[in-house]
Image (cartoon, rainbow, N blue to C red; front, top):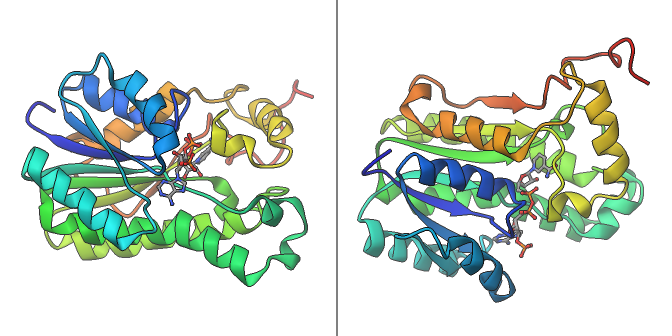
Amino acid sequence: MNGKTALVMGVANARSLAWAIAEQLLAAGARVGFSYQGERLKGELDKLLVDKPGTWSMQADATSEADLAALMDRVKQEFGELDYVVHAIAFAPRAAMEGRFVETTPDDWNTALNVSAYTFVAVARHAEPLLREGGSLITLTHHASQQVFPKYNVMGVAKAALEAATRYLASDLGAKGVRVNAVSAGPARTVAARSIPGFGTMFEEAGKASALRRNITNDEVGKLGLYLLSDLASGVTGQTVYVDAGAYIMAMKPQGTE
Ligand code: NAP
């Protein structure tokens, strides 16, 4: 990826899935810029980037049109053009994930769908003028888009919208040779995941129920991200690709696991 440029959005700390993908991009020789939501995350990111020469970072709330415009100005100033975007952003108010889905309020619905799905559309729109032919965008999703997971609630609906948006974006951006895909990851212990009530149990159950009888590693998410961004996936677009140790293919837990 020498000569390629990437924007990575959504690193909160070293456990973030966005960081796992960024590490792969950096190891492959890409130049990488980062955006983070709030100044409180800056210190964490600065620590991660201290031994990564050529990287830069800037604050950008993905729900703010002004922040996204300023971010793309910075991308243009740093890189001129852009090859890759990693969107690893999601949020739902805790109350919406504690109760019953049927009780989701309009405000919580709008917040979850706006932050977790619409921002991918907004980011793609702002990035489009800078994207080179052969470019590639990825987002992060979860199988709760397709099947019911306890307490995932409105986030499951947001992930379904995100995956549908991925297909529509792939159609629009495909006209200029840019690909758009979603990485559907099994559970990983991150800040966002810990906000899901009962996540610890879900994590353990997913490990036992997977074809590989284990959980995925962040590194495995990073490697799938790298593949989808790279020319190795030059014919792949509009897809939701799973890295879940073979969890969702199983109708029942494998024999021999409890
Ligand atoms: P994470 O480290 O907490 O990353 C989530 C990031 O989204 C944080 O940096 C967060 O910033 C950022 N964010 C939230 N609202 C934002 C906004 N308005 N503007 C800009 N950034 C915003 O957790 P993660 O698990 O790696 O999450 C990354 C993606 O992977 C999410 O889409 C998540 O749903 C998805 N995913 C996670 C898992 C899992 O089990 N961990 C599985 C499948 C998919 P703040 O900290 O400031 O809120």
